[in-house]
Amino acid sequence: MPVSLYPSAREPMVAARTFQTESGVGERLYHHCLFCSREFRPNSEYGRLPPGRRLAYDPERMRLWSICENCRRWNLIPIEERIDAIWRLERIVRDDAEMVAATENISLHRADLLTIVRIGAASFLEQAAWRYGRQLRARNLAFHSRTTRMSTLSVGAMAWLGESIRMWDLDIKWGPDAFADVLRWRQFGLEAWHGRSRCPHCNSVLHTLRFDLSWWLYPRLDENGRLIIGVPCTRCDPWNPEKVFDITGAEAEVLLRRVLAYQHISGAEEPLLREATDLIADAGGTGEIVRACAGGRHSLWRLGPVRTLALEIALSHSAERTLLEQKLRGLEQTWKHEEELAAIIDDELTTIRSRTTE
Image (cartoon, rainbow, N blue to C red; front, side):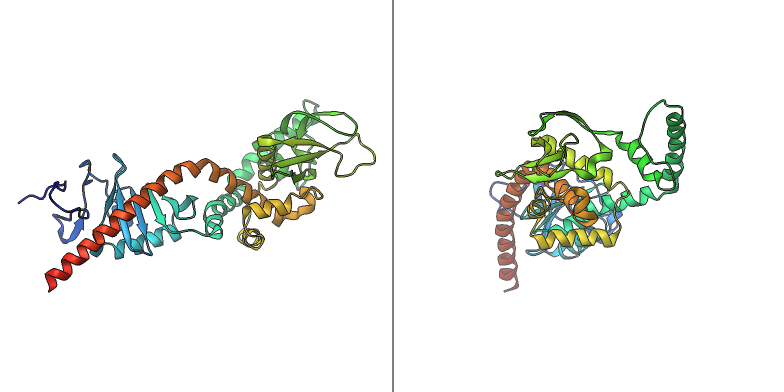
């Protein structure tokens, strides 16, 4: 007798139906969405996982769902099929997946074509190690790769030739250490910011900021916690940290992120990355490390490599969190609804089994 994919109005709500495949009795998979009947795509490359390229799991409560790509409904996997799959998902999240975003209750991960929603808070160190750590390590590997070396040296040779015949002025100190400067110029250009800012002391106006002055920027926060970037005024003499052109608002954060990426073009190796994430943890979080570094009395140069790397991680985390916050809030609401249903379903199934045993 065929099993219907949809529970009837008279039936109690149950977990996703179990189907036997032709390969054997033990290969029990859940091929279709209970709500729209759309077939799930298989996950054979990851071993014994429920089908579907979007999976959600809660390792603490031992819940597991296949999320339909068509109707976005969560299909609860039966209790007896969860343990091995949750164990495999934990290993994928830990060893292979890239963390995309996280809130206090859930985190979103991607591993090739698989999207995983993990229920449970992820620490910032885990997020930084996977999200930003991979980016910085990849940047470091690319910086030292043979392909990058050859292409940058070729561009540098043409740039040196153009500068020698006065076609342009790149202000690069040609020599053994010029590779990083040429790579920066190739990827970012010469100018970090365009706009208009007036010095409050001498009334001179800043229109353009070059990257080669970026180590001398002075980040600070105003009384409302908004970021301000101070650019030293070269016309004020004697100079002090109050005599700066102020770049404020969204421009300030974009400028600082560009400048830090420019300065950290070689990425970071594991020891430096660990120092930076430990510094963020000791400070109490990303907001606290930004406040600690943005006092207005020290330039980026004075902050040093560890604190500026921590500042880049914190700003990247803040920007991405803002963009994904709305999406994750919706996903979190869906999880809370599905968690209520799962608790009811698991309780009903446990009661039915105990009665059958008796």
